[in-house]
Image (tube, rainbow over all chains, first blue to last red; front, side):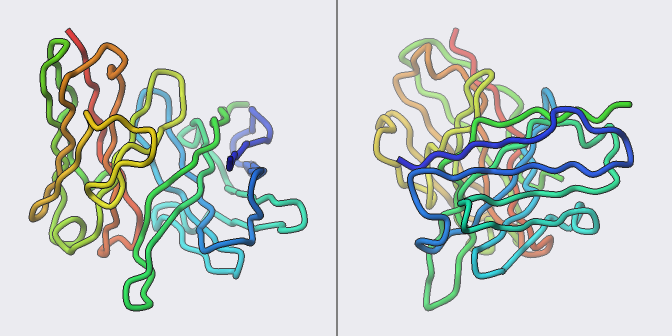
Length: 127
Length: 111
């Protein structure tokens, strides 16, 4: 059974960098064809896709966050990570990591669906 | 930035059928990108409900079904049960944004 677990500071000061790690268990992060993804949800609001990465180095980010987002993967620890710079109160949210499953049609990757998800971790931006 | 529009809320009595719409555009659902659906119970992470427009993962009751037509998709819940009370989100891709996108979310209330 594949499980994901987010970890990182629950409180970040404005203008600083938010750093989170997602630990994957039950499967090697390098196995199969998946994207490893970050999604967030402010309290009482909807879901927002942050970005994704593959273990081969491919990355895609939400254009609204691209200038502040960096992702990385550590296959030796079966983990992937998120860094979001210059945070403000608007970045306060529950942050989820998830695995993106996708199909290839005629060799072209079709954007996929998220399963499973981590339980989420609340990050508050406040001084 | 939600480019998939859902009704804020739908409600129905136990045993009834409800549907949730997800309206996109010619650069998202209308461009042929698949629609996926998630159920989020209070205080928990979203859970995959439907993928590839119509496919139920193992363990999801057949009371849940998905469909897609043109620039829209729908999730139907038949035989509504108390445990179906949750938030539901659709998800797809928008080629004009080059981003995976979620719907605005719909709260289902069981009367």
